Image (cartoon, rainbow, N blue to C red):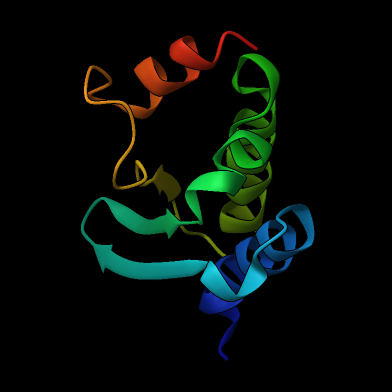
Length: 102
């Protein structure tokens, strides 16, 4: 992998270390004029581990990805896909975190 894909390697390593179902981790990487977008999908059972209490784990991962990106002169953003079959009332990850009441 090139230096530009270190963000992918970093995210994959961190997430697979945190979750109970590492085989279910899927990361899509796209690049456009806005920078790099990493889209993360995990097993629904692992969503709480990735989000963390009050979203702190997700915030920390995003901060570290920004640092990795800055090192490679790239803007890196992380999108966490909402698990399929989640609560129907939740329309975003932020609302799903609210519903968890962590």
